[in-house]
Amino acid sequence: MAFYENVLDLKLGTLDQKRRVAFYWIGGQNVSMLGLWEQPSGGFAPQHFAFEVSQEDLEQWIKRLVDNQIEIHNFLNTDDKRPLVFGWMPAVSIYFPDPDEHQLEIIATLPDRARPEVGIVSWAEWKKMIKSDS
Image (cartoon, rainbow, N blue to C red):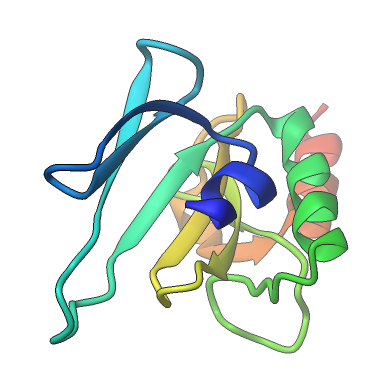
């Protein structure tokens, strides 16, 4: 819970101690939520969760993660930790693990036309392509 509250700055909606579950608001109150259930020892299957943010907020999210010493990586998990754009959407994103090794993704949809033919490219490369279209 501390990770989601203190690092990701999500607001707690409710905590049910009896069921050992915490619900956090995502995107503001009554928009979306994330439920975290405490599991008895015995393990769990890591999951993938994507959180949508604005394009402008993506850089602030990256800074927050780096400032909190959270190891970020891109979709291709290359040494280059800069965000990548999925041309078919289009959307730009970055990934990081939570303390339980779930893969979390911060993703921003882009207002540009989809370009599935480019595959996955760096955000800088995408910006150059879009600029050259103008």
